[in-house]
Image (tube, rainbow, N blue to C red; front, side):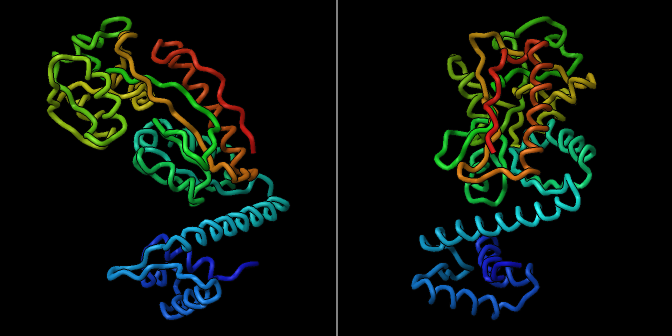
Length: 320
């Protein structure tokens, strides 16, 4: 490697919060890692880690240091990929983080098709909640992020956005499932509901939908897992609110029905694909982004034809 293993040591400690855990993962002695940290702190003239009773935490100087270290390590990974690509085209690695709903919905199928088309590519997919999806991208831990309701954030650049409204999900034998067109919220609220738990971005959007109503809503089940909501609807426990991407596979198989709300009651979840503003997308990541945008575009066109989503603007132009 062109760079000292000291960089890997510090990166792993920052991820684990512990010298002992980092040593176990790297298969080196804890004392060797500790010596490297002390030497670097002496060289910089600043403490990198704050020593706590139950581990280590980055200091302000450490935050600056880890940002530089991850830039260096990722740059080296890209160099390795390019060198391998001289011998074996279409070789590379892409790292990505997704919100739970997309990871349980269409994303696995997209990734499977990409890997089938590019068998030498390697994909690393992390799953996180909507409130922290941006953080691993900002820190350089992953190349890409995708999720709903991601706010504009300094240090991030948007590669594409899609406007996805929330609607009602029903079992196919429910009386409302056989009706045509958008459904009025008043009809839905006569039924038992199973909802995303408070604190999730999806529940925040649902609360906005329900806020104009004079009555309070008491769901029979609340959960943080979209796949659990889908299962409960299939079992007839209640109806739920999700976006059509969450249930596209179930609807195609005839296991669930999605109906949009009437226009005046609709709330939209912007879905964003994003990367770090200062990072250059390597060949593998650019190839994956191009493929993913094509898949998402085709899926959204299908939903547009069904009236489940509004006509979309063109995705943001990809810049490497």
